[in-house]
Each structure stands twice: as structure tokens, then as C-alpha cells.
Image (cartoon, rainbow, N blue to C red; front, side, top):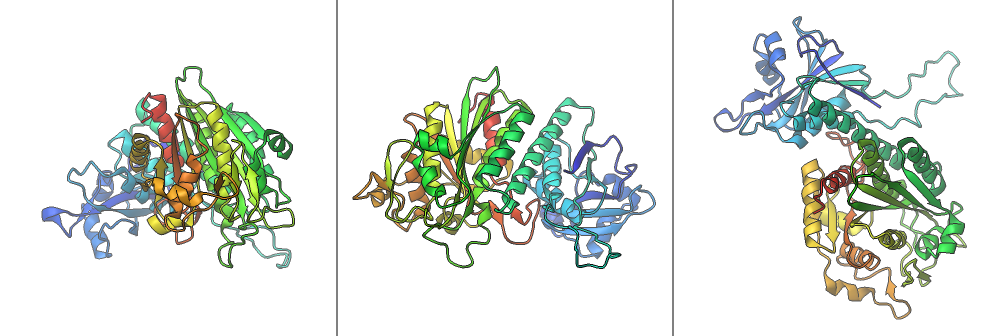
Length: 517
């Protein structure tokens, strides 16, 4: 993990391998001009006040995602200066949008792979700015290299194996206030949050032959011991005894048995309890309703919801939040075999409700249904489930935005505001009552499929059936942003992203402060 420090040295005196500054597009009368962002003053002085002109000569315009490298002049202690674009300059030059700062820092950190230390002299006039830069840099520096760089037994004995390029080793924030308690706290929070998001990314990127329900449960157990979180793991025998027909039905086709993992973080001064439920399908073949060719290769990511819940609970514990946070990881591997659930089978869920399985590839709602009912028994103040649930949500909102459904409009609005605040694109979605009829079954209490149109909303309506009476509940369908298959951008890597972790952590913080929404 990349180290993070609040530098006591200024931009001109920092000793590092590179120094990052921000540039922006001019607005109004300065439209078309390149504007240096706060933090670049000492660097501009080293360039004799001509840094913007030099960058413009090289084609820089300050656009978001733009990055320009320059050899540093003799007035600096670094060999390289990196200018990263922040987009259009705000009305107040010290009021840059935190998400733009995150993305800019992430863009720079990705470009600094292989470097030992880099100074980030981006705007840091406020605690929020410093935190955004820290988060962006730490998330942008991420790389999943666990399966790269091994010994090649076929290579000549004297051949050098360079291995993968390692992430930037150290981020030094320049221009923040290293002795200020608020800045220190913000940076410590950013570090804990980023480390857990990156751990979630590692889990999502781990191949399914190594990450399956039992091994995921072992990771959770180890983290619980490390951070004082009580962990309970229900194996197949316990699930059978408890009557968890949804989780068992999905997992019965695999040689790797299912698990239900409970992580309980408690604080002695907590007044509220938040339950988080994550879909943890460690590999989704579709089961008997097999996915078509071309749709299986990334299905290791179908446990992204469970990874997000796991990361959020651990982060809450590391931050010592005054709220009880319980995480439920519904873990199973959905495989076709002679033991697999068939289309037409009826499962008896933990709630006692029966479900006719019309499509075994609509399995996430089955494991979540059991976990939601179990979470409801403890009567938390609110429940939020997170899942890569439906392709329909991707069709509706694209690859970068997750949908929010809820049984309480105010709660849904609150989560949407939180997501936007922390820089996660989301959109509130309805739960139209008329779509419920499509899940009527002549055989069981409900079917796991309904109308094709509005499929993401149908899935939300199905989950709603398993939430306890009087409990505020929200469902985050992260099918789009959970796994990024394109080129990296900002602080978003290729592969697992850790989507929804920041939203869940901020929700826990608000709940601790008495503002559940």
C-alpha cells in the first residue's frame, strides 16, 4: 500500500522523485487561458513565472485528465514536474470541486507507477481539499500485481525478470497543515478508507479458483481479529439447520459450499445500528440458465457488493465510529452441475416464503433475500444492501452510475446526496407497485423473475419482500460501476473499483452523528 505523509517541506524544498501541480482552463474573460491552481506558486517561481506559458506551448489546456511532464528547473529539489488538468477554473480559485481534485490526483498517481516518492502540490486550502487529494492519490496508485512477475522456468537462467511496475510508494501532501489536528484526522481517514477500498479491489480481482465462499470467509475472519470485529460464519450445515434456502439453493451446484458471514462492529457509545448486506457470488456462471459466451469472463466480480460491505465495516472499525455496523456477506458460487437448482424448482427462503426459480441466473436476489431477512431480525435502524444485481441497471444508467431504490423516499434521497458528496455517481430509482404482479407464481409465493422491461426495478421489488416491517431499507445496484473493463481514468483502475464503499462509510459517519436520513 502506498504510504501517505503530510509534508513539512514546501514545494520548492521537497526532496522527491516528482512534484505534481494543478492547472485549469480559464473562464470568463480568461477563457482559453491556462490558469495555475493554488499550490503551484513555488513551481511557477522556479520557472521565472513562465510555467503556464511553457505548458501552453506544449499543448496543455487544463482539461480534466490531461497530464504534462516537464523537467524541473534548478530551483526545485525534484527532477520532474507533472501538471495535471482540473477542468474549468471555479469562480473562486480556492474552491475546486473535491471530486475533480480526487480525479486529478489519481491521474497523476497512475502516471507515477515505479516512482518512490512524489509530492502533490494540488489545492489544499481546506481539510476537504487535502482529504480529496489524499484519497485520489492513494486510489490512483492502486495496482493488482499478485499474479504477475512469477519465475518463468522456461526462461534462460541468466534472464532478468523485472516483474510488474509497482505503484507509487509514497505520496507527500504539500501545502496542507501537518501540525493541524483536523488535517491529521482527515489524512488518517483517507488512508484507512483507501486501504480498505483497495483491499476490496483485490478481492474483486482475485480469480475465482482462489476466492470462493470459504476463502472469502477466512479473509473476513482474519480482518475481524485484527480490527476487533466479531465474525460469525455459517457453513453448509448451519445454513441447512437455519433454513437458508435461498443461499443453499444458489450454492448447491458448486463443489465450493456457500457461507453466510456476519461481521459486527460495535461501539460502547453507539445509539444507532446500521446493517449492510452484500451480494457475494464469488463466481456466476448463471447456473443451469448458463450465461452465453462472452459474458462469463468477468463474473469473478459478482461478489463486489460483499466486498464493499466488508470494506465499509472494517473502515468503520478503524475509524472508531460511534455507531454499530453489522455486515452480512451472502457468499455462494453459482455453478451448473447435477446438483444445481433447476428452472422450475421451488426454494423455501429463510423468511418462510417460497420462491419459484424461473431463471437460475437471477441468483443474487435469492442469497440477498435470506440475508435481508436475517439482518431484519436484529431490528437495525436501517438496512442497505449492495449488489451487482442486474444488467438492466447498466442499460438504464450506464457503466459509471449505480441505482438507488428504497422503501422510504427520504432515506433514498439521503443516500443519493451522500453518494454525490463523496464523488460516487448514483441515481434514485422508483419501485413501481404495478411491476410486482409480474412475479406472481401459480406454484409458489413469488417467482424470482418478473417483467423483462424494468428488470432492475423488478429485482428491487423482490428484495423489498424480505425486509422486516418498519425498517428503513435501501438497495444499491452497482452492476455498472463495480468492475471497469476499459482503460483506467482518474483514480479508477481497470478491474474492480470498490464502488459504494465511500457511500457506505459516509452513511455510517452520518448515522454516528445522529443524521440517518
